[in-house]
Length: 164
Ligand code: HEM
Image (cartoon, rainbow, N blue to C red; front, side, top):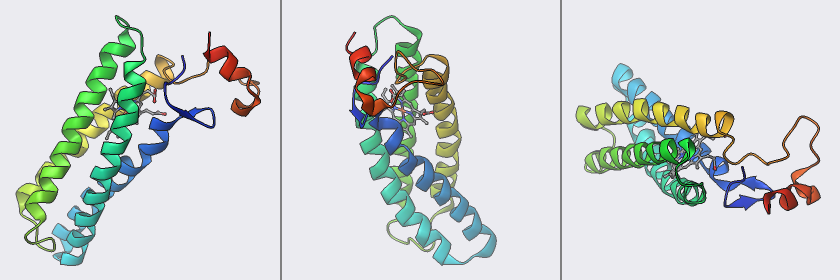
């Protein structure tokens, strides 16, 4: 099953998720480092990681929503894809709240802001597992003719298959 928005033959959504899934967990790691070292510089790194991670998450969500929209109604992919999207929107919102709470003192964030980030990370792991289920179990975004000896996505053959 083909994803709706592609770049060079591959779905754009998985290209963009590296930003939220890279930056936001790193922010939590830096928060924990801040708590264990009491060095405010780690919290300041987290502050900017969260800002860029939330922006990356919003961008990724737009492309994920477009791919989800293109799925056939009544399928398991459509159902669990909705859960995947909703949980990720909550995750992005929680990190945004955590960022707003840090704004007055980025180098000394309130403990509640750090706890919200940890809760959001747990939710993100659940949503990422559902994302893996969508791709590797339900073949969302995978070409119809995918196999270990398929021609390149740029050969044009896959595009023809997708049009079916
Ligand atoms: C911060 C926001 C988001 C993150 C971090 C995220 C993360 C992921 C991950 C990890 C995968 C599996 C990719 C793979 O294993 O190759 C995935 C796939 C997918 N996600 Fe998301 N997601 C986000 C938002 C959304 C939203 C809002 C929707 C809309 C319902 C959505 C729909 C999909 C779909 C349809 C797939 C299957 C692959 C594709 O067609 O692109 N995602 N996502």
